[in-house]
Image (cartoon, rainbow, N blue to C red):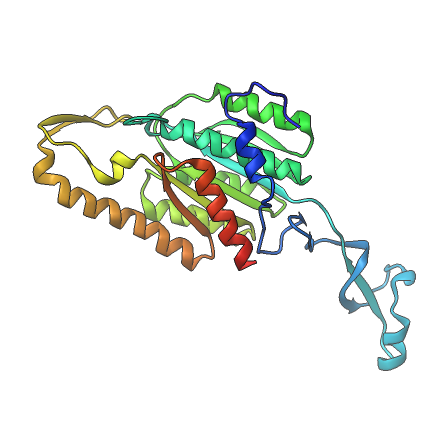
Length: 298
């Protein structure tokens, strides 16, 4: 499907993931392992429900059996079947460039985004890519062709860590502008005020989108493995703090755990799939584990 040579697509990984499909549990428009019923109605093969006849309706849609039973005029409505539209929202803010060893959070996220795009286009669903920091940096509308996958993969290769994080503003703007409900996939370290981010995620849910959040951190951000007096520099604000890790590690880990638990709890309450991971966990293993669990729930 995609030509070889792209940085963020590994043929061995996509071969392993090929048996999985991204299953949408909510009512969205498309095919993701079987048909999902569209909220739009038109001529199709599956009956949906009735509504009362109003002047101007096509009389060919009248349900004559219902008329015989009730002596009232009803119009048949049908469910049309269309492909899923998915949007991958990739955080490319400065903090995503952090790495202690191995892949940076942004590189890890690009591999994840590439694998998801490949899987969805392979099953003939439409997928788009949005990269953002304090504003939207790139917006690729959803399509489902192999050529479109190449466009996404090329764009991922060009992504670089940008400016400050402003997750909530970006998500509110997208929620207002994405009209057709579908699947929203967030890949981010979520380094913004949690209550603001949760409010923005709830905006997507209010618009009837299904949402998956991949919360990507570096292992060092979770475990704080430093052991000597050090200068710690905020990658986005450049603020510098000198501290002895031995005296602050316990409180730091407690705060990070609370940060993660807040997102876990609030996403659960909104029926959002929350998938925490860190860059020490192979992204293909993490994704395969998540999809296996999701398929069982389905």
